[in-house]
Image (tube, rainbow, N blue to C red; front, side, top):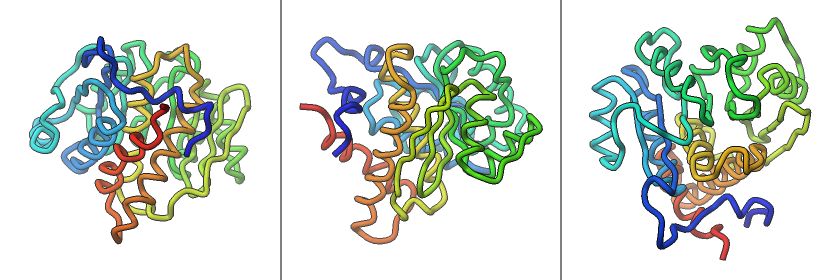
Length: 263
């Protein structure tokens, strides 16, 4: 089970709810080279319980996504949060432009993969975003600012301070830091997560928790911590049936959320 202090971030739909009141989450993810990132992130987000998904991608990616997740809506529109960058190479000019458009919409962001190198962090509201790099991506992000650190702890603290955002350094022991220097270590996480695409799943979980909880009324460290816990538990459950693929993890998210929903 999860710590009691995190349970308020999970919500059962209420009698007066509709798809908008339950939160709208946008994605600029996937590309011709990495189309699966779109499916993985969107599936995970839906399984957390967000009310509606918008998705922006090349036509081929959109068509593939709609075959698997027909509930998603293609194109820009209003959203409480956006997930940016999963499966997007930095040389994909169309998706890069879409990432920058979404980042300008003054809402909560999950900044992942290719988007980490593209965002002008000085233009963002403080502590409105969660960055989700792995170690290599974090090193490249810090290199933009002329910084280098040998220790993961120092690197994640510096990245949070420099960007003025919450930074989640993914790993078997995930480190999450905010700009004030608070750090949480979450793990050890399931070893079944050591497979392609699980980072895309995590980004979708983070995004859904942001969209379903009002920014400014929540602690982004709590959101990030809960996302990591859900992700790891979903992988553990998926592994009970044998070797795990990322989509298996995404599909297990609903069962974890069901079991962890507050009474």
